[in-house]
Length: 125
Image (cartoon, rainbow, N blue to C red; front, side):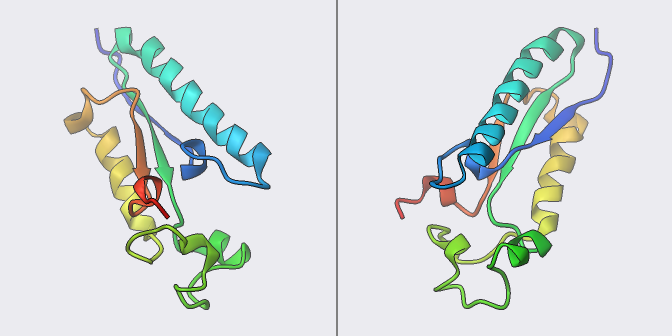
């Protein structure tokens, strides 16, 4: 039986790795991933896939307000430290991943945590 639909949660790379001085934020993003995995198990009998995306630094107002962004050279931008391509993601890059996960083409993907981070979570730096 498939009731239809799909769910995509938005966590963060902070749900995959830890960062100092932002414990509450990191804990909340780890919680989003845990809830996503539980919902994936609960939605499976009804054919509802549930996944999470974990964006890294994405260009926009949030990054600018946090002190990074286009006005800062990439080599000194603290939010790009450890991002191999040394650039911010574009909002449409995250949106396209969400659209795919909500599409019928992704119906067998469930419980996944998908980083959209330019390799930040696999980078040694």
